[in-house]
Image 1 (cartoon, one colour):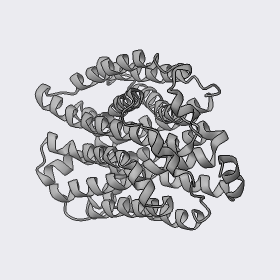
Image 2 (image 1 turned 180 degrees about the vertical axis):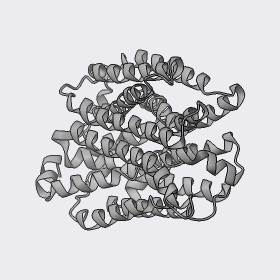
Image 3 (image 1 turned 90 degrees about the vertical axis):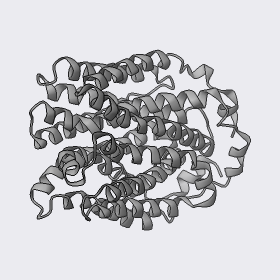
Length: 399
């Protein structure tokens, strides 16, 4: 069954878009809600900076591991069931934080939630390419904007919830509620989700051993490594500079507002298959932000956060679209995106851990921001290689 036929037979696309947004909102609060409360969490649990970094690193690495297992997941578990199970995992991971803030409990919640998030992120690109083929960049941007927006809500609302809760760590458990709401929306509206009948076609394409797949994974990983480090360490960085926990959380939320805007706006400008200009623009904005954090963190701090977030937010969906552009068949494209995310999230998951190590060695965060600025410069050079005419022909022609 072709993509166009599936689209014609799938009703209520508006409702499905709304459900995708609801799910996207659940993809980041598990990560971003930790940063603003990190001093309290460390004091209550006795975690070092290096161990605390695992609260962000573990979910990201779990996302990478699940993405690498994407082919097995798509073969053995239906999209409907895998998303439902994943939302339950995200909700359970958040609810675990209702318990006393102990290292084992916190790390277990991070790992469980990261597994759930990873499965959803494997499934969604395939669903979007198949159901919204003609509007793929725009829908991918909408999904990514919801993802970024959820991260902003996690950073901004968690300190407020902690201040208004009888037990401060209960604020982390409230993030189970959006996952439950998304599950209620997904289950009835996914009944008509058509399953691709040509999954066997993807077995003839050897994604894993192709250099371009590894290049995309490295590219995606380094970009998201900057995001992972910022959501883990930007609030503690500004707290160390003398600002309040509320301001640091708000700054992270404003960075996420910039991400949301970037995820919406830059994909809407993607009218041609050559994505390099928009990717270069997104990377330039990231460079400006990181340099601002290094040179003048207390001057124009909101500007640095928003501009860096805009670049990070725009780059995320453009990377996904870049990978999806490589293949016409949704399942093959989905396998490539899953592999890219698998390698990428493992790399990104190591980033906040490396940042914690650099913080312990240097006593501040300037070394980390400098490292990421150099990474962005390398990504700019790598972007020049993504010429559409040079995409692997066996991926483009396989229908």
